[in-house]
Image (cartoon, rainbow, N blue to C red; front, side):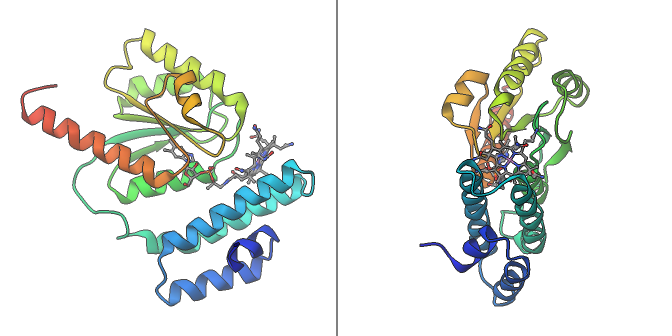
Length: 220
Ligand code: B12
């Protein structure tokens, strides 16, 4: 059954959505649960768009409303994720042709809360810009956010070029975003795929922890 919040967000009832979130947060409800209900609404908006019940205008309005909703939730997510002094560097990008950024921004925000250094290259990013940035920053992770199927080939291209340039060995590459699946991970040559930002954060934390242990044992 759909929650009231999910239904109202699908119906683009801005005032009701924002006031319910404020009220539930005020009552001390788990912000992650509220977030999940908002995310569910975005999937349903997507379905309505696909079925031609909604058009581009509704997609845009839903995107703006979702951002407003997550801005209300964000301050309460602090402390929900584990604090710690283990840090890593990550480059994030939505590749050329794709301008969706809501999911990328949420993943980036959660990473920052964990103490990661996040270099967000934005949306519609040229593959060569990603490669140059990897050369410059030498990050631990590269994360692609993908909402359109046309992104698969440019992401694959970046990963192949990184391999050829000898920049791939220490770099863990993540792909995330609504349309990604394990097959997309295999096709592009990434290391990890998810449609859940928290899972992505967990992957980064575990990778960093494993590296600390390997280093302590005299490895790389
Ligand atoms: C809102 C929206 C828009 C907004 C985007 C606003 C913005 N600032 O991002 C606007 C109006 C701009 C838009 C435009 C278009 N859209 Co649109 N859009 C959506 C919609 C409804 C929601 C996407 C969203 O933000 N979801 C909420 C976020 C939080 O979810 P998420 O991205 O999956 O992120 C979560 C996880 O996946 C994860 N995550 C995300 N990225 C990453 C990265 C990493 C590394 C990790 C670890 C995790 C991670 O973290 C998040 C939290 O858990 C989807 C429907 C859907 N089912 O996704 C369609 C959808 C993606 N859009 C679609 C289409 C077709 C378009 C347009 C082509 C429409 C048009 N005719 O112009 C344009 C494309 C423009 C372009 N060149 O990019 C299609 C894509 C179809 C396809 N297979 O390619 C979809 C699926 C709708 C549909 N069912 O047809 N859209």
